[in-house]
Image (cartoon, rainbow, N blue to C red; front, side, top):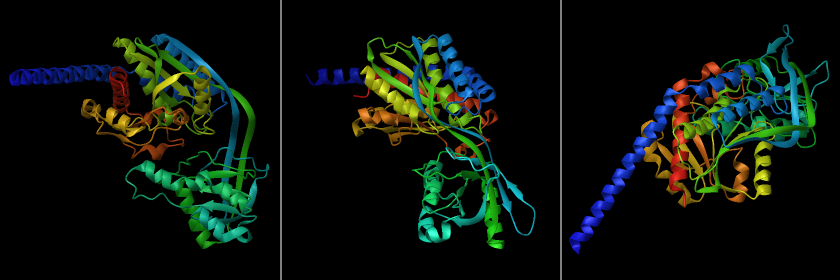
Length: 454
């Protein structure tokens, strides 16, 4: 009896080792395809070249959706369709900032409006500047000092954060809520230091939040922020002239793009792979998030070309409007509720196309542990950890219905050099890093679909 038990155990262990070896061989097959195919790279080049500035409501945003829709149809998706929804929008035509020192001529700064900033009068807004380092400082100074002035938020990015997404989270409050706080205390406009760890002349825009009162809000480059700060030290009464030409659009019709391949065994269980196609008015949006769009979309191509018989339905969702109001993610959740669909898991890619690093999982600990067991298959390709963490903005609303969320993570050191700026162009994309990302995302989806997360 004892020897029979040992024999059975050895057989089971042999079968397990054999299965793992077989799986590693197939994962390599996925990466071999990803690393020798350039379709996603060409798709991204098209989006950056022919449809930059894909902000919600623009012609380029719709042109980008149409291009990807045709790509999915050619790839052989079982279904491809546009999910229509309506949402407010915002349009920016131009913006500028000038320092008006008493000792010399006007100096134009590198600037971009924050969304959804209101317009200034045609002649702009001219006033003295109050420099602050935090929202709390605005409160401390009070209306007596702030009222009638232009508030300049100039807290620098803390370089001691090793993970740059943590550095961004630490600094972004002055962009996201600074203008709102300045308006509360009577400011007539707000200027914000670009939220980036780079020192250059690229202004980085982004969204800002307002309650009832809106004031013109504009970002300036980090080097220009240093110049303005130095000028204020020399001449504390320095004035600035701010110009913004923008428009609030009460409501517009737009779309999420959905493409899927049906599951063979459990088609009612849907694995969502998401990214956002919109990009700010000042950028080609290569890393944010054109790269995410083409990497996640290529999962469908790989499943088709490698003839992977997926158990569950694999659905690619290209979201509209992550940048401004995050309406695409909310609209998709409403769609899921209306259809009473079962979303098995959702994965998002919105961290650029840099060297693969990790997957983070926002779910119950048992699910995190289950998915983390797949890390051994992806370690040879750069994934050094699968751990509990962030899910994503677009897929975030699905947490309301208890969907496990995942995010593809990359080496983020260069990401915020480009984020929300004119520096985020196609030439900043490394083909091999993009291809590795495709392999990593496809492989984890393949493993999750095959073995499940229960």
